Amino acid sequence: MKTISISNKTLKKLENYNVEEINNTEAKLYLLPQKEKWNKKVDLLKIFYNKNGSIFSNKMYTINELIENNKIINIQELSMPEKLVVVNGEICGYIQEFIENINFKLVLDNPNISVKEKIDMFKQIGEILEKMKKIRENTSIKDFFLNDLHEANFILNIQSKKINVVDMDSCKINGNKPFASKYLTPFSNTSTMPFKYIQNTDSSFNGFVVANQNSDYYCYIIMVLNFLYGDNMSNMKTPEFYSYLNYLRSIGLSYKLLDEFSKIYEYGDNENIKDYLDYIYPDIVIKSKKKYFKQIGE
Image 1 (spheres, helix red, strand yellow):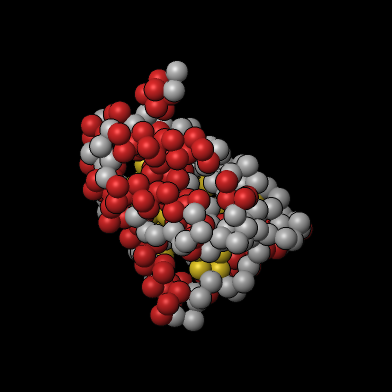
Image 2: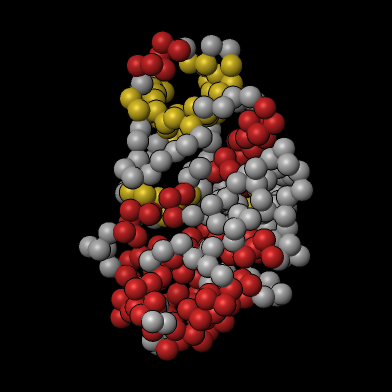
């Protein structure tokens, strides 16, 4: 187990790290200056508020699995934990490399960033999911999924200009218990399809769905649909969902992408939609918003 010890005194002196308009309800973030020989760097320190019980134990197990399997996973776009943090003898969080970034949610909300650029970033997320699939197929890690895919858990790395994944401590890996996921809830239509989105039966843990490939692709597709619709579509009732897909077809969106969207509430497996995202043109994005869809129903 790789650890780093920090005193309470040192912790109180560290600079807080706050993400504009993004709330972190489970932990507090700090910037931790580090020096290795002549090299200086800054790490991101994550200290959890709740440091007791089965959920926290599951969190520590998950983080340790990520640390121990970092070399096997070897996906640069995943912002991985590096060491567990011990404060005054108590394990309470972890450190990872700090990345200068813009949160992906803020990128999507920024009208000065083009649709083409945003679509390219969505495609990068699909490529990350494809790399994770190859890890499951080609290594000893057969149980590895992002689980909590949503816009604020991705960042645009300012240095590399690439999308990275953050908050990996909520992922599914090596038999850990399920964590909560923003778009996998009892209020979403996934709750009506337990054969496809496997429901957690252990009430000791707060994840509604046990993450698998279908659930990861579901969340990915919901993110793209949210971008088009301009609001959260995960709780939209099934008839309205398909009505919206028909509307997208009426404004010119390709059947090829619409067929992939429709699969999330069908019996068959979901697919990675990254290769279909070029069908989303700027004029379609303008017309796809909630206000225009609602007008046709009035």
